[in-house]
Amino acid sequence: MALIDLANPTRFLRLVDRVLPWLAAATLIVFAFGLFQAMHAPDDYQQGATVKIMFLHVPAAWLGMMGWTLMSAAALGTLVWRHPLADVAGKAAAPLGAAFTFICLVTGSLWGRPTWGTYWVWDARLTSMLVLLLLYLGVIALYWTAEDPNRGSRAAAVLTLVGALNLPIIKFSVDWWNTLHQPASILRMGGSAIDNSILIPLLTMAVAFTLLFFTLHLAAMRNEILRRRVRTMQMMQAQALAEAAT
Amino acid sequence: MNLGPHADFIIASYAVTAFVVAAMAAWVVLDHSSLKRMLGDLDDQGVTRRSRRKDDA
Image 1 (cartoon, chains in turn yellow, brown):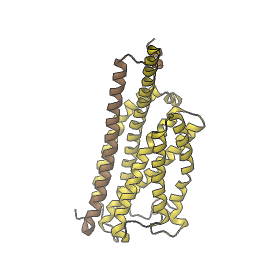
Image 2 (tube, chains in turn yellow, orange):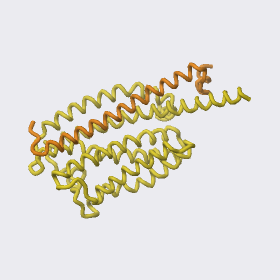
Image 3 (cartoon, chains in turn brown, yellow):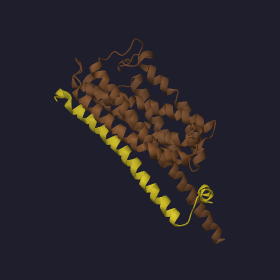
Image 4 (cartoon, chains in turn green, brown):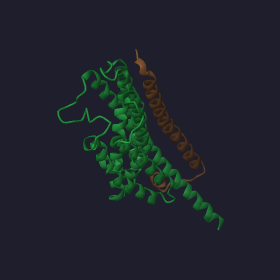
């Protein structure tokens, strides 16, 4: 099957039905493995057992940002090529990205209290991450409240592309400003600063969370295609009833 | 496994994450079954999409 064939929603639904059970099974297996590794990882010499929060916090932060990156690519597809599947992908990713950003903020706050002595500070990393959550909520509101779905989709796509400016701010905030949040310790020049005994469980959990994201995203895309079919059929039914009444 | 003096924070983090992940999964599954039911109802009422009519012809 050529990649372009997947642009057809019916073919895409058939593919999702085939792939989804395998993806869900892989997610569960990698999660079980990752959680086992996380529970048996050694304590950090400074932070003690609270380092276990990192196995949730860091993957959630990555996925919060990856969700917006995916939505930005979908927004280009919506605005430039007006492709319906691009719009479906963007709309389906928004609540998932918001949920992972929420997890990142809550776990970060719960990690901050014992580590920094505070749940929250208005430093650049934390604030830009909160802005990302607010942007997600804005996009979700545009998608779900617009009376004309096409206009809502275009407005959401524009907001998504404007909001993409926040991604480099999140990434480099710890370098550009003096923040309480630590600088990058995994994706940095010179390699990771984390010992393998903690890095390996972290990477396993990151793979598990990423598989979870794509499983839920494909399922949510399938739902969105079905929702559009229901809407079309309801409109056809209403039109037929109106014609019969006249 | 000893979670040390800050066990509450660690347990709360895992509990919140588990709750949010379960809520997302439940939303996707329940939404799917509700949409399938609505499509089935419309089908039973004889409403068919144009592309489906084309497929059947």
